[in-house]
Amino acid sequence: MTKRTSVLGSVVGALFALATVMSAVTCGPVQAKEASITVAQSIDVSSLNPYGDINTATFAMWKHIMEPLVLFDFNKRTYYGVLAESWTMKDTEYVFKIRKGIRFHDGNELTAHDVKFSLDQALNSIQAVILKSAIKSVDVVDDHTVRVNTKTPFANLLSRLKHIVIVSQKAHEKWGADIKDHPIGTGPFKFVTWKKGNYFVVAKAGSYWGEPAKLDKIIWRPIQEDASRVTALESGEVDVITAVPTHEVARLEKKPNLRVEKTRALRQLFIALSPRFEPFKNPQVRKAMNHAIDVDYIIKNVLDGMAYRAVGPTGPQHIGYNANIKPYSYDPKKARELLAQAGYPNGFDLKFNSSSGRYVKDREVAQVIADQLGRVGIRTQIVFGEHGTYWSDITKGKVNMYLSGGFNEEDPELFLSLYYETGITPRIGLSDPKFDELLRKERMTMNPAESDKLLQEISAYAYNEMVPTISLWHPVDLYGVNNRLVWKPNPNEEMYFHRAYVK
Image (cartoon, rainbow, N blue to C red; front, side, top):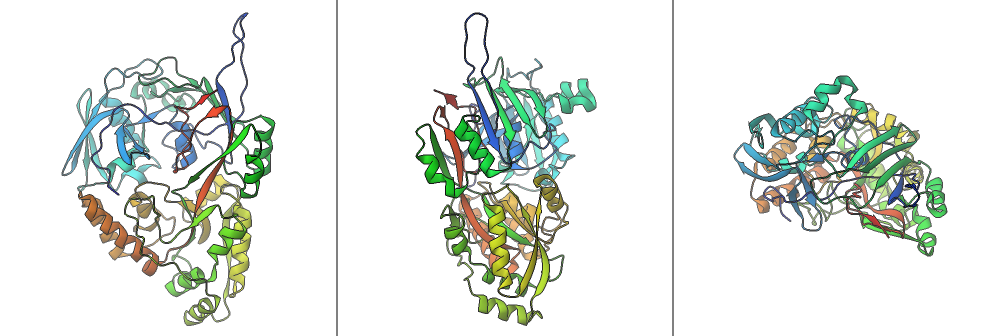
């Protein structure tokens, strides 16, 4: 696999989304059906501020309206330009040429000043965790040229910039604090309305610089309960649902008007074990817990085989995957021995935080894991949280053991930083000088083969020596889809409907 620091860009390509509820419209005496779809997912968009969150589902919805400089093509395994027409990189400088003739939905022309303004906004927001270790400053060279100055040579910058959408500086100056109610971008869809907890609606932009969208409208609606999403799909209320329960796949596939789209996910499900808290300060405890969980059993009997065992922080679809890492064996006896060596011969009690409805069968998974841990003397109290609060507590470092998903990036560098690097976020709270130095070297390595070797070394060291998590699996993402919609999902959980159309 290669690094993606060179690729060029040409036409906008993908934009993301999720959705739900929709209806048809009439025009004058002649009735014409809108090409509209409704998408139901387990969570709602978190904010209309495009720099106000860093979760995958929200990124995808924003990016139908607003666009980044670059995106990643999963088929070609390379980066391509969206708002950036091309770019060059030398030492600590990336120079981006911005496409000419692009206008925001409010009519203002896109310039390099908007790009600098947007990156500066991101650097002063929650999204600073994506950029702050990379970017020193941003300069406007001319109206269509931007220079991004990195703190050191930074080979992974494109993989980070793909998350940062570009907004209109003039719109921000006009609306001020009220800009949150007026999302304005350059994308193929424009914002219509959002009612928190009910729906988020976008409509085809009247004019668009690239290939126009084929859909007239997309509505996303949050439906947390699995059964309710399935019912909505079967009744025709929605056209797409996320996280189809694995036991429903075979039944839904027999429906003549429905199909289940399956894609092996980049995302890994894992249990984080924060060494800020006892008893996880002792790595022997963390290793014991890895031996206490029968991952293969859960994949087969809870997930109906719809997942692939995860070994280490990355998987086969990632850049720099290490196929030589050996998984922890399921060995309750060894787990008890390690616990005794760590000073816990009788086990211990702790809280186990888990999402509910965010991932396929996450409640059932948490319950089975708690039962398996109990067999080696680790007595858990499961705490199920509403996703917004749950995720907020994780990002603030308030929980010591939690079930989550991550690493849904083609380049694992960003997630290795967010979860494992000293001082970047408190999600796990690690501090390991050797790891930090290896990751620093990888970022500065422009040779793809050398970069891959370093990422392989990092993965092995993190999994075998640091042991900050229990790696579980890479799920098979399951989407229930009405056959009237022509659409294929990506492996990073970001749903792009720019090219989708209805028959």
